[in-house]
Amino acid sequence: MYKFFGNIFFIGFIILNMEVHGDSSSSITCTGTACATLSDSYKTQINELPSQFQSQYLSKVIENMNQSSAAVNSISSLQGMGSINKFQIGLGMSASGSQQENINFKYRDLTFKDLPNVGFGVSPNLMLGFNLGWLLGQGPRDADDVNDRSILHRINFYFSGFNVNTNTADSKGSVPSSFEYTGKVSMSQAGMGVRVDLVQPGDGIFIRFLGINAGIGIRKQNFAFELDDTKSSNAKFTLGTQTGTWISQTQFDYSTKAYSVPMDFRTGFQIFRFISIFGGMGVTKSTAESTMSINRDGPVKFSTDTSSTALYSTLTTSTVTTADKLAGNLNMSLSESSKKSYSQSYALVGFEIDVWKLKIIAEGYMMDKIQAASVGVKIDL
Image (cartoon, rainbow, N blue to C red; front, side, top):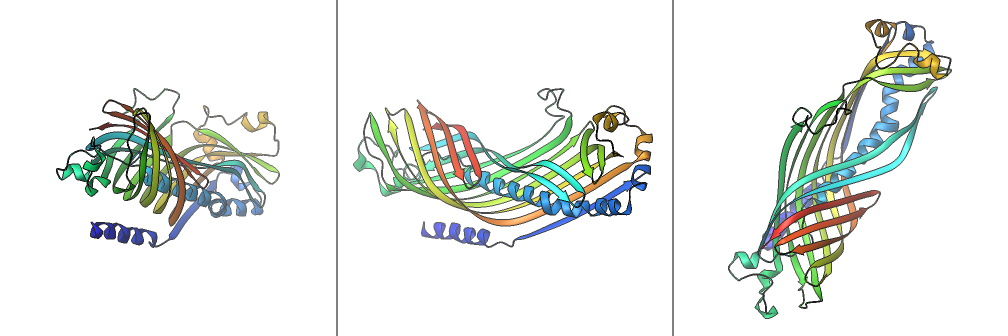
């Protein structure tokens, strides 16, 4: 047992000290009459736009996504209070999110306002858990007599995992016609953990103390998605005295890998042997590596008349032609990657509802600038 804990701490030390780095690349081309008539100063600003956009905006978004991915990977185990009578099997979903202030991008005469700065993570999982005392033939943990519990009944093991690949073609029947995007998503998750009772639970019918336990685990997650819009969207920006209209299609690719070692303490109480309310505090050590690429391409128009009539009279999402592209076309490609290690402290609250052998679980986690939650059901035998 000591060797097992030692191996987990060793792996956690490796994760905490993994190399931290980031890479980026960008390119932009502006062709056609609309671009040719711009002043040399404006052309220079357009050429320098991608690198400035990455430093002011994209790097902040991928940092937000990194932290959210690390957070959801840390909580995706569906442990609940952290005690098992014999064994459990269940299915759940975890999600995390972070909403920061919108970013106003400005570089010389170029301005983009209220760009969203959000991060999110999702992780479905299947879990299996067992009590060590029960596994080794010493009976169920929740024995009628407290004295019948051995020291092995204090130890519970958890395993979780999931693997799914899907795309919009597979989900065509459930995707509304108004969703004008195509893409695919792949997710895989695996982890294990152990929880040990520091203070054993008590007895009682009306109100029952559930003890205090400590847990540690190790988890990994891979998540990737591609999203392409099937219609053109109209983006508006300013370039000095010029107002730009960019009728373009966007391809967005994102992937992340996260490795986490969460550690926490949990305690709670049970009412009428029906509902358990629990809470705790912990810390997770994580390394997240993300890559994001964006390609946007389409006709561009510049005008000194800022009225919507002048801006949209010749270019709309339904009337883009080859002639429009020849008159002016803007293509921008951005790629950003980041690999960082994080230490995230958190508080958690949750409840379990027991309906015979079924447990319905909900957990909420509060981290710095990030909120996360898990919901699921387990069969508890």
